[in-house]
Length: 408
Image 1 (cartoon, rainbow, N blue to C red):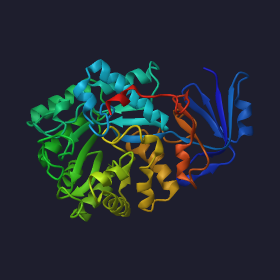
Image 2: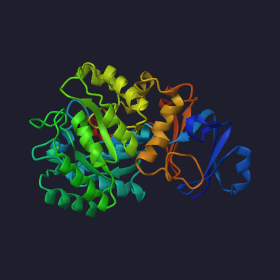
Image 3: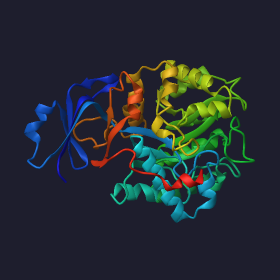
Image 4: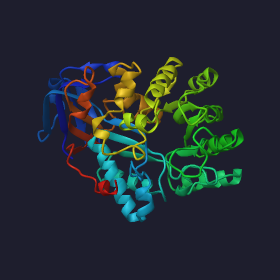
């Protein structure tokens, strides 16, 4: 593979918006060889190196989404693909959704719930170069109570032996994470409501202990304060949604300072699942925007780490490229430099991949995007993608149309 050197007006090379201007990134194979000024990299280039120059543009690490469902079809019926497609067709749909994310500059995703380990198959086909797409981390079917949230994915458990056997089976299929539904959810008819816990404290401790014994981190789905507290005390690696609810509405959340302190002290990272267009959540559930703003500020004041997640699949894939979810962070008062860190470095650390992705530096995976403008001053630049590179492979944004669109 020939060397590729990408030059631009600016390169985001560090935390808190540290820019190299002008800058260049030298890619050799799947990895970054060097980052520096365009002139300083000339001595490292072979005669056949490919040179790309983007005046007025910024190079930054590829974006990370730590909570997606590639097997879901988005509104109005997120389960349409699952309910109508066989495994072969569903895998193609998932691959299409992955390409839509790549089109939006997302080069790493964590899939937190699929059927029949299809996300493992997709992950491996992308990693081998058979398909083009973002890096995929998988969890398999989430562990849920009998008849609980997303029971149809095949992860129903109750007794400790069932918990251990399911985690062992997941590990045997090569998942990257274990997902557990600590509370109910929104899309499963006749299942526990979102403010109700699905597992006891002891059951969650068994989940974490068994996963840890197999070297797997645990993502705990928790909308309620009670489920959040149980997941935190059990030692979950990440807590998903983390809405702090006590009822079906956002009127009476319990922002529990003691639980927040436990989360911060243990270094548990929270994925707020804002939604690809979080204003749509306001239409479906009035009060969501104000509540999300309050929670983001409050958690940040407690020193709780935040990982980017949109719940794409429950929210629309086809709206992702607009990056409207970033308005939630802005509304909460986060500066652009911090938001970019959440989208890259902080999420990479939360996924346990801080030494591989999320940073433009020697030896890191060549996952990056080029945007027209300066996202430090204007985050809408993220919607003006000029180039996406994933593991050294170039992709032109907007070049793909997902066949799954007919499901919506």
